[in-house]
Image (cartoon, rainbow, N blue to C red; front, top):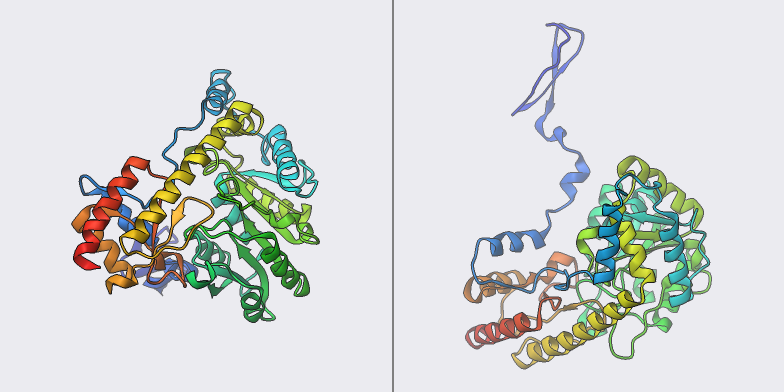
Amino acid sequence: MNMTSVLTREKGQTIPTNGHSTLRRPHHSRLSERIHRVAPSAIRRFFDIAATMENVISLGIGEPNFVTPAPILQAGLESIRQGDTAYTSNAGVLGLRASVAEMLQRRYGGPAYDPEQEVLITVGVSEAMYLAMQAILDPGDEVIVPQPCFVSYTADVILAGGTVVDVPTYAANDFVVTPEQIEAAITPRTKALLIGYPCNPTGAVMNRQELMAIARVVEKHDLLVISDEIYDRLVYGSHEHVMFASLPGMAERTIHLGGMSKDYAMTGWRIGYAAGPADLLGAMRKIHQYLIMSAPTAGQAAALAAFTDPVAELAVQEMVASYDTRRRLIVSGLNEIGLDCFEPKGAFYAFPSVKRTGMSEHEFAEQLLLEEQVAVIPGSAFGKGGEGHVRCAYAASQENIEIALERMQRFMRRHG
């Protein structure tokens, strides 16, 4: 046999050796072991089913129903009209990085980040999270992940070769992780803590006192922290968002993640950012250079306008006020029809219990979709602690929320 390329076959892979014989790898070796450990997104399953049906009201997708505010749109369009369509610096436009650093310090009392070395513009927070895990984890390193949490957290740890240590949170404690839970989960292999407040999927928030208690545990055990704060502007009532890196002693050990998608209704622009110590951000930038090159150029121009245009800021405040109205509508509506729901004070999700129906969260979501054409997501799709709950996104229009509640009320009359 000549040393020529060979085709992968259904039962295995033929590997040329010295021209006289071949070896056969087992079929499973075509994929990495870690990819087998990553479960498919349970969210996508319900989106795929809903896409085949008519007249579906979706409370499943975590995406604002607003169009990106006009000044932000105009900045992106003007960038394209001027022919600004080339790559930017790998780390992102310096003016945008400087605006991120200035905003974090002004709004939250954050560290005085160096825009050149300590801020990175990414393709959404999803890329930033992936980069952070790839930069800090060696095989077997453990990351403590309070759950329920955004679906990519677990996947990103696994794909970086790390091990997820689940710490479930519950409605009885407003889905807030405690320092005692974190300390109990720490082992000699613990490298980092991953937190995300305001929380997707629960809408839970943490106040300064609660975060300070966690910071003391982090410092005691010399942990890194990845803090996903993508919903920082979307908080309600008297709650004020606290940037974890602004807490005493936390700047030197925290990778702060944020972005434009939720606060500014810019999901499709794909602009996120990371800020943190120069050594950690330098490692993330190195991976970003090979993986992405640079974030979308027009998106960066639009993001800069979001931070600097006063009309854009007013639009954000109006969107937050609208979400608050929808929040109160959906939470009161769910409680009235028998789906017990704690009060979410952040993001745009309600996380009601479906235990009163006697169904599992998967059965409830499937039956509600088939019988009443309302799409929600089973809480267990987001990890431990989500069992017996479903996620309802109130980023949908107020009209659609009202229709969904009417349909859910009919459903509960039959099953509640």
